Each structure stands twice: as C-alpha cells, then as structure tokens.
Image (cartoon, rainbow, N blue to C red; front, side):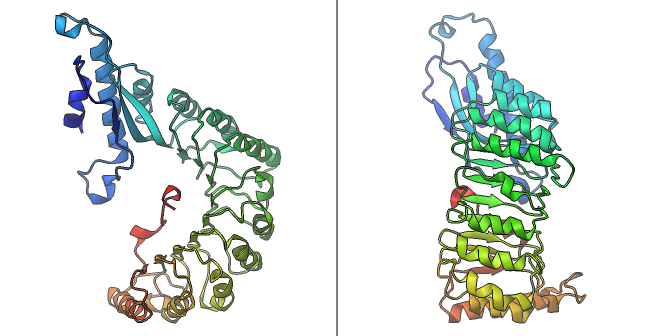
Length: 387
C-alpha cells in the first residue's frame, strides 16, 4: 500500500495521474492475519494524505519545485473508521495535500455523536453513495441529529443504521421516530434502509417515507403483525428488491401477514433473508406457494431455522419453478444435530452426505447453476448495489 502511494505523495511538476479508483477492493480479514483490512487500508491512506499535505507545505528550494500548483490526485475509496482511527481520518479529509480522498461507501463503528458528525462534515459531498453507522449507541435522539446532516450528499442511496440502540417501546419515542422519518424523507435518492436490531415493535407505519425503497433490512426488530401488514400495503412492496426479516419469529402470529406480504413483493423481489425466523418443516406447505410467486428471486437465506433433511428436500423440490434462484443458504438439518432442537455439534459426515444428495437432486432437475449451502461465508447474500 505505502509503496503504491509513494509516487503520488511527491510534488513532481509532471504528474499524469489525476484519479485513482480503489473502491470495491475486498476486505482481506477473512484471508489471514497478514491481509490488509478495510480499516487498515483506511489508516494507511489517511497517513499518506497527511504526509503529502506536509510535503506540500514545506519550503521549496529548487527551481524544479517552483511553478504552478499541482492539482491533487483524487483517490476514490471505501472507508472504515472507528474510535481509534477517527482523528487521523478527520485530519486527512480536511487536509489540502497532493492526495485527496473521495469516499464512496463510509462505514463507522463505535464513534461518539460528535465524532460521527465531524467526519460526516469532513467528507466530500459528491460521490458518497452509502453511510453505515453501527454499534455507535447513538439512540433515537442521536440519529435525529445525524440523519439530517446526510441531506448534503446528493448521491446518497443507502443508509444503514444497525445496532443504534433504538427502542420505540420506551415512553415518548413515537415523536422521535416521526422526526427520524421526516429526516429520512429529505434524502431524495434513498433506496436502501437498514434498521437492524432497532426495536420497532408495531411502529413501522411511522416510517412511511414518500419514496419507495428498493432494499429494506429489519433483522431482529421485534416486528409485530401490524408491521408486516403495513409493509404489504405500502408503496415499498412493489419496489423492493431486497428484504431482510431475519431474527423475527415468523412461526406464529407473524406468519399470516408474512404470507400476504410475499405476493405483494413478488414482482420485484430478488433477495429474501429469513435467517433465524423459527421456521420448520411444518411451515413449508403454506410458505412455498407464495414463495413461488417471487419469480425474480435469486437469493434465499434460511440459515438458523429448524428444517430437517426431509424438509430441505421438500424445499428444493418446491422451489423448482424459481428459475432465477442461484444461492440458498440453508440451516444444518435438525436430524444431523446432536440435540432435538437443532443446536449442538453437527457431524460433518451427515452434512456432507446431505449436500451430495441435494447436489444430485439439482443435477437431475437441470439446476446445476444453483448453490445450496450451509456455509456462513455465504450468509448475508448480495450487496444491494450488486442486485
């Protein structure tokens, strides 16, 4: 990283590079301890920008260094920052050196409200398409201060606010949720919203945005039947490409409104995540008919549910009409687990035998392009911008 940026840190009067696009580089954390992560890459870039800024302010002693100011090199990047790297990134963003950071996707964890606002203010407005703030403990009051500041980013399409310590079940929270909805309504390009682990509990109707969303993620939000009923009747339903309801119990009172929601989203839905929703074999007869209406579905996430080997085979056969389906992340079958409830150790031999059987069924049905897996590496599916 440092060697690659070194030529652009100098003040040569004859540079030819104006833009360096480093967006989309995969995080190396999963490949080994020596790999460059998004966090470490952000720190390295910030240090390079500060070094370039310091060199630009140093006295120029030679004729070669004199002349017209050299335009900065614009580095387009995805940034990840937390409390340990916030100060250096803020300094780099506010610097005016030979390197200039322009962020595409901004991810922040464990930042204070003040630190979050400072960094958002320091970012270049144009080109930012996503803001993700997680584990920041901002609460509803903090989000009501942060979200209005996002209106300065004209290209912003994705706002992700998981683990923000929002619980509308507390007294007096409805007014705050309405304020948040109003601020989100100012984001004219908003297409994706993630409110993971925000305890909405029957208040989803208060987030009635003026423009339909294409991606809505509500995992572990303590949803109630009225929330799914509202969503099915909302303008979002016919526009949704991605829907994540993971961690909401769909096995009892939420099941009927969910079965009505599926036809409402069927014309557009490509990605459906139902991980840890307490679904079992007994739910498949009522779940499969409306699921088969989602003819564009390419990803189905069912990890953490209580399906048996027989149930998985029924699911595979039942999804045969879904010709666009490419990835199914299924749970470990309950009959392969040590305990009756599906928890405990999972014998590798049992799972491998089932995987081979599922692959054989796919080959026989001419569905070789589909991947059925219980690997957590695939859990989460596609990014919204890749749909």
